[in-house]
Length: 258
Image (cartoon, rainbow, N blue to C red; front, side, top):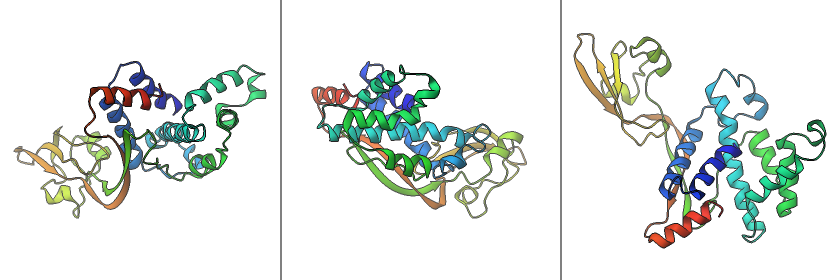
């Protein structure tokens, strides 16, 4: 997860992506995390089926990148902007040079000590809550500074309205929920799935579309909002509107830790 955090941060710092690309990358990750069925699993439960369940396999990476963002903000606050999570990574590098692997422990063991040394703060409570117990991580609005803010939204949960795994395996639509929006839009079991046309996994606000053929072979495109009955909490990054080129460049330096 720390790697995912730094893939976005360093890509922006190096100019490989711009500010909008950075925000888009984070929003894609946040949408996936919000929609994950494994999102609230305790760590001990997450490791069961880790290699078989895609949601469980991805969860540590999502949690790790969010934890890095959370700690980055806490370190900047504690040091009045003098240091950030980069200092922790350098401290971890130095700690990793001392003793044997058995003596020094894992990155998970070393991180609290590194943060304590860099910023004088205790992060064990956050690790216990969000990593061990599985409480979902919500970033504060100013996690990336004032020029990029984090909004917290409550939305209908993403629900395609049919069994996508079974449909993908057979090529025929299966498991359509008769009480869902897909059924209301005309999707039925047995339709041949030809192509997907639009939609964004994890985001019920974006219209989902499928090109299908019915039992008579007639093709049609069925579109609908994939809104489930449950709700989900989604966080999104947004760039402060109205920034000129110089302000956007300064913003990119800030959020990239430069």
